[in-house]
Image: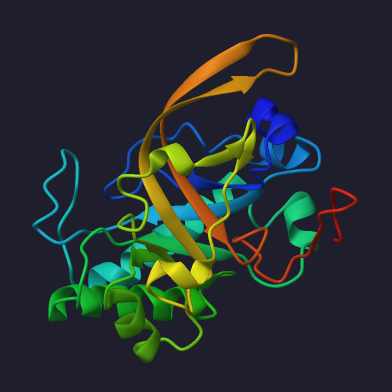
Length: 244
């Protein structure tokens, strides 16, 4: 990650909160401070992979989509974010409440069970029971608009890989320089972030101590904010520094 920070134009990364109902990999949980300390410091998008529609059959995925489960999972997401450090130390000095992004893998208009689950999750996250605000990672097609109608304060990170599905060769414009497509191409103009490539085969990264390393299977995202965990933060690209 330090090599990417130093030798590419990447500025933020997803960060899995775990163990979550549909994500057991805890490897990110102890590295928030490390990521922030890699000068100038990574922006972060905390991701909570909750209950999924039964059509999502990946091993280890949970499908309990009720409002009550949404409330329980919201409290778990907040607890995990606290454990990772999003409300303590230097994080507590950042402006505004941190956002947590609920991962919703099904696309299109959400069925009633899924909608009840997500709306209850959002309501609990924004309540005085947590120190956070809600965000979602979801499909550009109908899902984001449906959820924003019920949750006007919601920040949406959408996935739409159709625009570049057969053009992964356009991911980089120069060595170490990733393309930044206009978020208006995402299919949901109100999106804060857009996942525009899934499964990029590999990239070669220069390491801080010299040498290179090949990193396989990349997802690429672009956003209108430099730090999705705190969308109001500002980054001075010319100086290469955060303004708070």
